[in-house]
Length: 177
Image (spheres, helix red, strand yellow):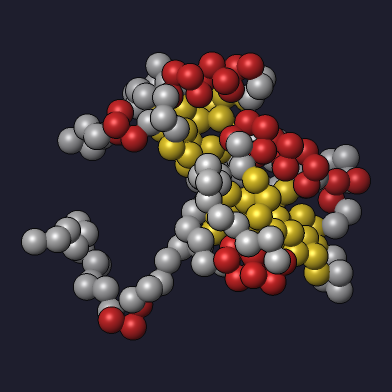
């Protein structure tokens, strides 16, 4: 028998019409794309797959991913755009032009009141090594792996103040028991 998902009140069987649906990306608005791109590429090793500019509406979208070694990504722009929108687990950074020039401009991080959006999450092969890397990168910690009630979970902030959870998959096995 194959796993069909945990059953909880409100959960229904996946309708046949949703076959092939997948979560493609999550979007975060960023004040300064250069700062945000430097953070996500340097600290988390993400690459920009595609940048889309919308001059009339004055914003740009940057689609980032952690690319597996040897993964074949199309060079042709149109093919790469279609390929990007067929992937799983991308991060879209949206830059509304001019925000980087406003000294007091900031987006709500979702964790201050009123709460809403919470965080994005990266899985890493070695949580302790990742924590040491974040120290080298001088990342702002919300919570280190040995702090708080939930051990083996790290929370850091990106340059816009968004929280990023960092976990090691095998250390999560006993969560919620």
